Length: 190
Length: 190
Image 1 (cartoon, chains in turn green, purple):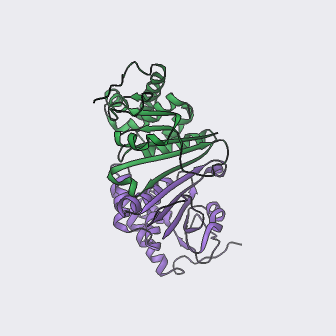
Image 2: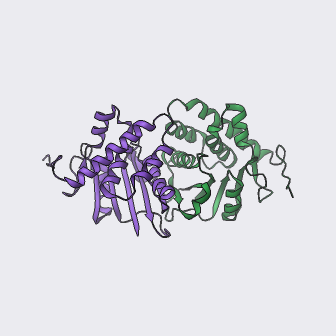
């Protein structure tokens, strides 16, 4: 079993930190083989940012993600650029406000940043909430492992809001799977 | 030109953060192609930690480091484990106190943690000082790029000690190259 996850958006959204936390949750706390990668260069121009996590029960011979099982897109540009790397049966998770026109009607469209702002007063923890959404919607990693990895990695003094963000995301992710069309109906602008 | 760097030690030494900063310095601030990777799994047991950075002027087809140009080892175990991956003409940088018996007489043995503790009062910034040593000793990345990447990545409010740690490391790295045997003569314990 090999699971390929890509977290994509813009610099400053904390997606590289999120990638490391996801990798440490699966690798250090669930005993999986994990490779976590970020690339910089021509494709990173324009402030784009992406982190990849490959999780496997066996050895990982090729560390880059090629056919994604999960794509979390936190900007429209990242969504449009990477959607074609997603497997047909893969999970597309997008921020409902930052990705107003997802390229698939089966996208899980979750207002991650908005809910974090409303519930926690700051957008700062949206990357951790996004991990919660990913875990709640896909189950690629368990909550205990994810929580342990979050608490080990975030700056001292920010454990509590990060824990809340994680739980908020988990709930949003589970709700999105259970009621995919209810809260955020998708309507194309044009 | 392809440069492979591995930062290896134990969890909690901040080497994954250091790897990301090195990657962002070369990738975002110097315009190189960079892939930054960490692996978890069987080889991470026992608290081992390593981060890899591959830097190239051209496309990077294989993202993992195989023949290292630079190995920074912050524990004896990491040094012993990875020394054989270093090219013959590669640079081995070790913490003088944490790696008491480097496997090569040409190792650059620098008391990174001790000097950070003496100069900054805390060991917390040793990973940033280690980046400074690496830059000062090898020149794989320039100081302006490294400083910009450090300041963009470290927690708000810690910019000043991190900047000092970087400069301290840079000086130590340059001194180690200029006077390789002077300050820290190598004597085997047994």
